[in-house]
Length: 315
Ligand code: CP
Image (tube, rainbow, N blue to C red; front, side, top):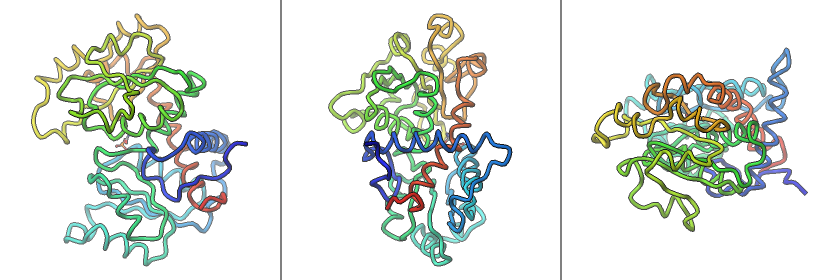
């Protein structure tokens, strides 16, 4: 019998989420997607629930889609940015969270540059915590919306070949996707230049299931999906490759690849550096599903908020 409730109280990452929990989130997201197609895109599901969006790092897609998801579910929402708050006067994450919780809130969505910040919050406050991206650790709702988008275009994840290309070292998206995709039975390849791959792949590739290659052609051959990752200039302490032009020559997905692999779907979590990870024509290509990913972000975040709110019977 399919799972009815999540076993987890928080969403800190996908590492500990089982296939049945991921399947429940994706199934719930598909149901909420129907709400988003109605003339009035709002349901009373989370009426009376208060959600705080704590963003200590910039965001466009994640922040707006969480806020939209909360509004579509009729939750009360409060938005917090580190700039303009008492964090700039030296207030700690713990004090910030406890002061916000003292105003009677139920759920916290947090993005932070420190890996583990969402886990730390679970020890400071009683609210349900949702990780909206913590450093290079995890970005679970991104991986969930990626998996929803893949199933829309390719059917079941079981046995599917997904290649993730680019700045693996600094990517929280790749970590969440590896956990989620492997749990759902997909085959994962990671590809990038040596300096952008982690020195030790053990944590990223439990039991060696993840295939590693430095050659783009090898990653694309036989792939159903190519997921390009943004080169994260802001997290690089030094130049890890000679130039973005050379990176594009060796690892950028170009129109010739779209022509050579006629069934290949291309994804990117955004924001895209056009002409670096993807040629501009590839970003706009009919088999690039980047905006579908963004659309699915709202439904996935509605599902996660609902399932962790306690309104669906979960703990
Ligand atoms: N994909 C993603 O996390 O984008 P934002 O940084 O704009 O939220």
